[in-house]
Length: 282
Image 1 (cartoon, rainbow, N blue to C red):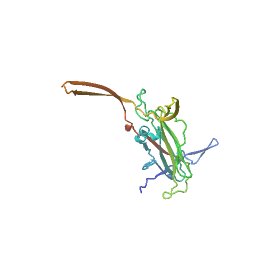
Image 2: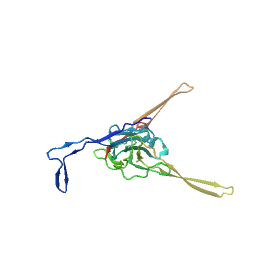
Image 3: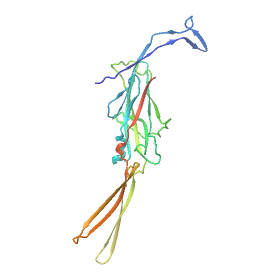
Image 4: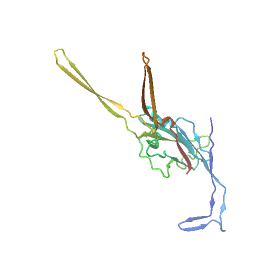
Protein backbone atom coordinates (compact mmCIF):
# COMPACT_ATOMS: atom_id res chain seq x y z
CA UNK A 1 0.00 0.00 0.00
CA UNK A 2 1.36 3.39 -0.95
CA UNK A 3 2.21 5.58 2.04
CA UNK A 4 1.76 9.27 1.45
CA UNK A 5 4.31 11.78 2.58
CA UNK A 6 3.30 13.73 5.70
CA UNK A 7 4.40 17.33 5.94
CA UNK A 8 5.34 18.67 9.39
CA UNK A 9 4.56 22.17 10.59
CA UNK A 10 7.23 24.05 12.48
CA UNK A 11 6.65 27.55 13.83
CA UNK A 12 9.67 29.74 14.61
CA UNK A 13 8.68 32.14 17.41
CA UNK A 14 10.26 35.59 17.59
CA UNK A 15 9.38 37.58 20.69
CA UNK A 16 9.98 41.28 21.12
CA UNK A 17 7.33 43.23 23.06
CA UNK A 18 4.05 42.17 24.62
CA UNK A 19 1.37 44.84 24.39
CA UNK A 20 -1.48 44.77 26.92
CA UNK A 21 -4.06 47.48 27.64
CA UNK A 22 -2.07 49.96 25.64
CA UNK A 23 1.09 49.54 27.75
CA UNK A 24 4.28 47.98 26.35
CA UNK A 25 6.34 45.80 28.68
CA UNK A 26 9.93 45.04 27.75
CA UNK A 27 11.01 41.44 28.13
CA UNK A 28 14.72 42.26 27.84
CA UNK A 29 16.70 45.16 29.04
CA UNK A 30 18.27 45.73 25.65
CA UNK A 31 16.56 46.68 22.42
CA UNK A 32 16.10 44.22 19.53
CA UNK A 33 14.72 40.71 19.46
CA UNK A 34 15.65 37.18 20.38
CA UNK A 35 15.31 34.03 18.24
CA UNK A 36 14.00 30.91 19.94
CA UNK A 37 13.99 27.34 18.60
CA UNK A 38 11.12 26.27 16.33
CA UNK A 39 8.18 24.53 17.98
CA UNK A 40 6.63 21.54 16.22
CA UNK A 41 2.84 21.96 15.99
CA UNK A 42 1.97 18.68 14.31
CA UNK A 43 1.63 17.16 10.88
CA UNK A 44 -1.01 17.45 8.17
CA UNK A 45 -2.14 15.42 5.16
CA UNK A 46 -4.38 16.35 2.24
CA UNK A 47 -5.56 14.40 -0.81
CA UNK A 48 -8.37 14.41 -3.38
CA UNK A 49 -9.74 11.69 -5.66
CA UNK A 50 -12.65 10.95 -8.02
CA UNK A 51 -15.39 8.63 -6.74
CA UNK A 52 -13.65 5.79 -8.53
CA UNK A 53 -9.96 6.54 -8.91
CA UNK A 54 -6.61 6.86 -7.23
CA UNK A 55 -6.06 9.71 -4.73
CA UNK A 56 -3.82 12.66 -5.56
CA UNK A 57 -1.72 13.57 -2.50
CA UNK A 58 -0.51 17.06 -1.76
CA UNK A 59 3.27 17.28 -1.63
CA UNK A 60 4.49 19.80 0.95
CA UNK A 61 1.23 21.74 0.79
CA UNK A 62 1.02 22.03 -3.00
CA UNK A 63 -2.34 22.07 -4.80
CA UNK A 64 -3.81 18.87 -6.24
CA UNK A 65 -6.06 18.50 -9.29
CA UNK A 66 -8.92 16.16 -10.15
CA UNK A 67 -10.59 16.15 -13.57
CA UNK A 68 -14.12 15.27 -14.60
CA UNK A 69 -13.62 13.29 -17.83
CA UNK A 70 -15.12 14.71 -20.98
CA UNK A 71 -16.70 11.30 -21.59
CA UNK A 72 -18.84 11.81 -18.48
CA UNK A 73 -20.04 15.23 -19.68
CA UNK A 74 -20.71 13.82 -23.17
CA UNK A 75 -23.11 11.25 -21.68
CA UNK A 76 -25.75 13.98 -21.83
CA UNK A 77 -25.66 13.62 -25.60
CA UNK A 78 -24.81 9.92 -25.96
CA UNK A 79 -26.77 8.25 -23.14
CA UNK A 80 -30.53 8.85 -23.34
CA UNK A 81 -31.04 7.48 -19.82
CA UNK A 82 -29.42 10.63 -18.37
CA UNK A 83 -32.38 12.74 -19.59
CA UNK A 84 -29.93 15.59 -20.18
CA UNK A 85 -28.39 15.65 -16.69
CA UNK A 86 -25.28 13.99 -15.23
CA UNK A 87 -23.67 14.16 -11.77
CA UNK A 88 -20.03 13.37 -11.10
CA UNK A 89 -18.52 13.13 -7.60
CA UNK A 90 -15.10 13.52 -6.04
CA UNK A 91 -13.85 13.68 -2.47
CA UNK A 92 -11.24 15.41 -0.36
CA UNK A 93 -9.53 13.69 2.55
CA UNK A 94 -7.05 14.76 5.16
CA UNK A 95 -6.19 15.51 8.75
CA UNK A 96 -4.21 17.83 10.98
CA UNK A 97 -2.48 16.65 14.14
CA UNK A 98 -1.65 18.64 17.23
CA UNK A 99 -2.91 22.22 17.35
CA UNK A 100 -3.22 22.62 13.58
CA UNK A 101 -6.38 22.66 11.48
CA UNK A 102 -7.00 22.06 7.78
CA UNK A 103 -8.81 24.18 5.20
CA UNK A 104 -8.71 24.30 1.41
CA UNK A 105 -9.91 26.26 -1.61
CA UNK A 106 -11.61 24.60 -4.58
CA UNK A 107 -11.24 26.52 -7.82
CA UNK A 108 -12.10 25.84 -11.46
CA UNK A 109 -12.56 27.68 -14.74
CA UNK A 110 -15.94 27.27 -16.44
CA UNK A 111 -16.01 26.92 -20.21
CA UNK A 112 -15.08 30.21 -21.89
CA UNK A 113 -17.49 30.99 -24.72
CA UNK A 114 -15.37 32.24 -27.60
CA UNK A 115 -18.24 31.94 -30.10
CA UNK A 116 -21.47 33.34 -28.58
CA UNK A 117 -23.51 32.46 -31.64
CA UNK A 118 -22.91 28.71 -31.41
CA UNK A 119 -22.53 25.86 -28.91
CA UNK A 120 -19.19 24.12 -29.43
CA UNK A 121 -19.21 21.73 -26.45
CA UNK A 122 -21.80 20.01 -24.30
CA UNK A 123 -20.57 21.92 -21.24
CA UNK A 124 -21.00 25.25 -23.02
CA UNK A 125 -24.64 24.43 -23.70
CA UNK A 126 -25.29 23.31 -20.12
CA UNK A 127 -25.70 24.71 -16.62
CA UNK A 128 -22.80 23.79 -14.31
CA UNK A 129 -23.21 23.57 -10.52
CA UNK A 130 -20.56 22.50 -8.00
CA UNK A 131 -21.56 21.93 -4.38
CA UNK A 132 -20.82 19.78 -1.35
CA UNK A 133 -22.66 16.48 -1.00
CA UNK A 134 -23.90 14.94 2.24
CA UNK A 135 -23.22 11.37 3.32
CA UNK A 136 -26.06 9.20 4.62
CA UNK A 137 -25.43 7.78 8.10
CA UNK A 138 -27.39 4.63 7.25
CA UNK A 139 -25.99 3.60 3.88
CA UNK A 140 -22.90 5.74 3.50
CA UNK A 141 -24.16 6.87 0.07
CA UNK A 142 -23.39 10.39 -1.11
CA UNK A 143 -26.50 12.52 -1.54
CA UNK A 144 -26.30 15.29 -4.12
CA UNK A 145 -29.27 17.46 -3.13
CA UNK A 146 -30.41 20.24 -5.50
CA UNK A 147 -27.89 23.06 -5.01
CA UNK A 148 -28.21 26.80 -4.92
CA UNK A 149 -27.22 28.92 -7.92
CA UNK A 150 -23.61 28.65 -9.01
CA UNK A 151 -21.42 31.49 -7.62
CA UNK A 152 -20.14 34.03 -10.10
CA UNK A 153 -16.65 33.70 -11.54
CA UNK A 154 -14.07 36.33 -10.63
CA UNK A 155 -11.57 36.95 -13.43
CA UNK A 156 -12.88 33.80 -15.10
CA UNK A 157 -12.31 31.54 -12.06
CA UNK A 158 -14.84 30.22 -9.52
CA UNK A 159 -13.42 29.70 -5.99
CA UNK A 160 -15.10 27.93 -3.08
CA UNK A 161 -13.62 27.85 0.45
CA UNK A 162 -14.06 24.86 2.77
CA UNK A 163 -12.83 23.70 6.18
CA UNK A 164 -11.89 20.08 6.60
CA UNK A 165 -10.86 20.19 10.27
CA UNK A 166 -10.93 22.91 12.89
CA UNK A 167 -7.67 23.71 14.73
CA UNK A 168 -7.00 21.46 17.71
CA UNK A 169 -9.75 18.94 16.92
CA UNK A 170 -7.23 16.11 16.48
CA UNK A 171 -4.58 16.78 19.16
CA UNK A 172 -3.78 13.23 20.23
CA UNK A 173 -3.45 11.56 16.83
CA UNK A 174 -0.11 10.16 15.74
CA UNK A 175 1.34 9.44 12.33
CA UNK A 176 0.44 5.77 12.83
CA UNK A 177 -3.14 6.26 14.10
CA UNK A 178 -4.86 9.04 12.20
CA UNK A 179 -8.48 10.16 12.27
CA UNK A 180 -8.88 11.37 8.70
CA UNK A 181 -11.87 13.44 7.59
CA UNK A 182 -13.65 13.21 4.24
CA UNK A 183 -15.74 15.75 2.34
CA UNK A 184 -17.60 14.97 -0.89
CA UNK A 185 -18.28 17.31 -3.81
CA UNK A 186 -20.91 16.98 -6.53
CA UNK A 187 -20.52 18.34 -10.06
CA UNK A 188 -23.87 18.67 -11.83
CA UNK A 189 -24.12 19.34 -15.58
CA UNK A 190 -27.62 19.86 -17.03
CA UNK A 191 -28.32 20.55 -20.70
CA UNK A 192 -30.00 23.92 -21.34
CA UNK A 193 -31.62 22.93 -24.63
CA UNK A 194 -35.24 22.02 -25.21
CA UNK A 195 -36.46 19.68 -22.45
CA UNK A 196 -38.35 16.47 -23.28
CA UNK A 197 -41.96 17.24 -24.21
CA UNK A 198 -45.11 15.15 -24.73
CA UNK A 199 -46.33 14.39 -28.24
CA UNK A 200 -50.09 13.84 -28.51
CA UNK A 201 -51.48 11.18 -30.86
CA UNK A 202 -55.12 10.58 -31.80
CA UNK A 203 -56.34 7.34 -33.39
CA UNK A 204 -59.86 7.16 -34.88
CA UNK A 205 -61.59 4.02 -36.13
CA UNK A 206 -64.81 4.07 -38.21
CA UNK A 207 -66.86 0.91 -38.83
CA UNK A 208 -69.96 0.46 -41.06
CA UNK A 209 -72.32 -2.42 -40.42
CA UNK A 210 -74.28 -4.44 -43.03
CA UNK A 211 -77.41 -2.34 -42.45
CA UNK A 212 -75.52 0.86 -43.19
CA UNK A 213 -75.04 2.14 -39.64
CA UNK A 214 -71.71 3.83 -38.92
CA UNK A 215 -69.85 3.62 -35.59
CA UNK A 216 -66.83 5.78 -34.81
CA UNK A 217 -64.42 5.47 -31.88
CA UNK A 218 -61.36 7.61 -31.00
CA UNK A 219 -58.50 7.20 -28.55
CA UNK A 220 -55.74 9.58 -27.44
CA UNK A 221 -52.25 8.59 -26.31
CA UNK A 222 -49.01 10.50 -25.68
CA UNK A 223 -45.33 9.85 -26.16
CA UNK A 224 -42.40 11.68 -24.52
CA UNK A 225 -40.15 13.12 -27.21
CA UNK A 226 -36.56 13.92 -26.27
CA UNK A 227 -34.80 16.52 -28.38
CA UNK A 228 -31.22 15.47 -29.12
CA UNK A 229 -28.25 17.53 -27.95
CA UNK A 230 -26.81 19.37 -30.92
CA UNK A 231 -23.48 21.11 -31.04
CA UNK A 232 -22.45 23.72 -33.57
CA UNK A 233 -22.53 22.40 -37.14
CA UNK A 234 -19.28 21.77 -38.95
CA UNK A 235 -20.96 22.41 -42.28
CA UNK A 236 -23.19 20.84 -44.96
CA UNK A 237 -22.44 17.49 -46.54
CA UNK A 238 -23.57 17.20 -50.15
CA UNK A 239 -24.55 13.90 -51.72
CA UNK A 240 -25.15 13.18 -55.40
CA UNK A 241 -26.50 10.07 -57.04
CA UNK A 242 -26.40 9.43 -60.80
CA UNK A 243 -28.14 6.51 -62.51
CA UNK A 244 -27.58 5.35 -66.11
CA UNK A 245 -29.99 2.78 -67.57
CA UNK A 246 -29.86 1.11 -71.01
CA UNK A 247 -33.08 -0.27 -72.48
CA UNK A 248 -33.53 -3.34 -74.69
CA UNK A 249 -33.65 -1.04 -77.71
CA UNK A 250 -30.19 0.26 -76.89
CA UNK A 251 -31.35 3.67 -75.76
CA UNK A 252 -29.60 5.13 -72.67
CA UNK A 253 -31.41 7.11 -69.99
CA UNK A 254 -29.70 9.30 -67.39
CA UNK A 255 -31.09 10.45 -64.01
CA UNK A 256 -29.46 12.45 -61.23
CA UNK A 257 -30.49 13.58 -57.78
CA UNK A 258 -28.81 15.72 -55.09
CA UNK A 259 -29.39 15.98 -51.34
CA UNK A 260 -27.56 17.54 -48.44
CA UNK A 261 -27.10 16.84 -44.74
CA UNK A 262 -25.94 19.17 -41.96
CA UNK A 263 -22.98 17.65 -40.08
CA UNK A 264 -22.64 18.54 -36.37
CA UNK A 265 -19.65 18.32 -34.03
CA UNK A 266 -19.24 15.01 -32.21
CA UNK A 267 -19.81 15.04 -28.42
CA UNK A 268 -17.10 12.35 -28.05
CA UNK A 269 -14.49 15.11 -28.42
CA UNK A 270 -15.77 16.84 -25.24
CA UNK A 271 -12.87 18.17 -23.11
CA UNK A 272 -12.60 17.40 -19.40
CA UNK A 273 -13.22 19.87 -16.57
CA UNK A 274 -10.42 20.24 -13.97
CA UNK A 275 -10.76 21.23 -10.32
CA UNK A 276 -7.81 22.55 -8.32
CA UNK A 277 -7.78 22.05 -4.54
CA UNK A 278 -5.27 24.11 -2.58
CA UNK A 279 -4.82 23.11 1.10
CA UNK A 280 -4.05 25.56 3.86
CA UNK A 281 -3.10 25.01 7.50
CA UNK A 282 -5.17 26.99 9.98
